[in-house]
Length: 120
Image (cartoon, rainbow, N blue to C red; front, side, top):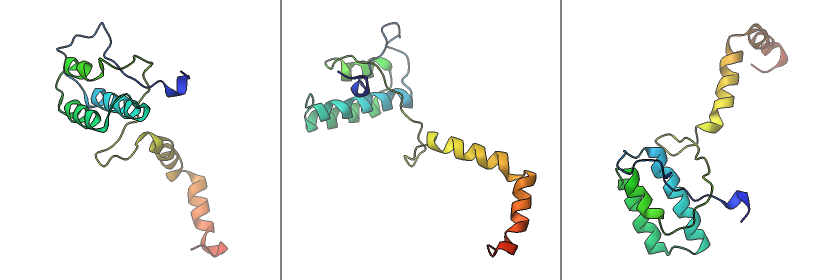
C-alpha cells in the first residue's frame, strides 16, 4: 500500500493501556476509522459505534480496542483544530507574517502612500 494511504493508528506497544487518552489520541483513532470505512473494512453502523466510543474513551486501552481488528499502518499527523473544527496549522504562517510586518517601517510607509494611489 502506498505511504499516502497509510493512516491507521494504533496505541504503541510500550504505552500503558491505563494512561489517559488525549483529544489528539481520539482524533487519530477517528481518522483511522474514517479511512477504514472508506476501504470497506467497516460498515457504516460499525463506524458510527466506534466513533462514538472513541470520543467517549478515557484511556489509551479503550482506544486500542477500537482499532484492534484493523491493519496496523504508519500514523499520519492530524492538524490542530479549534473548537469550531477549523484547521489552526494553516493559519500559523499567515499569523507570523502579520506579526512580523504589522509594526515595521515599510508597512507604515506603504500605509502613508495608499491614499495617494487612490487606495484609501
